[in-house]
Length: 211
Image (cartoon, rainbow, N blue to C red; front, top):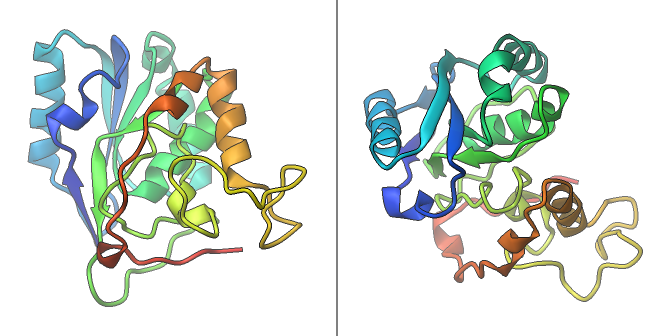
């Protein structure tokens, strides 16, 4: 089972653009999603002056084919926004970030942290991964997770072992921080790389890398 919790308002303060399209993923029955708290979070954003160009409910955002079709259905609201805010587990956020460019190449932010829970976590119909670290930084890294995809779990840029755009652990694997850099540059958001992330509490996460 996956459990998501809403990020504190102060964590999103100063990070989000002036207009947002919001997607709430109700997930599957194996996911606990705090819908009431998500709606309260969005209302707080409205009161802070952020324009909400649309708000939709979805499920199984981790399904790339479903999400691709949904984003096209939501295209009218998305095209009026400067960013998309997703309330879901980390896999859903990453899937939206990967598919959003078919509608409009804008940044994707997460309104949730996915929390570790002992036991079988379920399967995801995606190659993307979320290791339930409880400290999601996808809003800073253009929807690409360095914690799950960097062999060393680095959150402030690449290590010194990367060469020719490849990870030092596997020459067939792209350095995830190069991919983050390229997507941020394309979106004109390289300033995000200046936001230093604090040391992580890996005890609360499920450290695992998928190659």
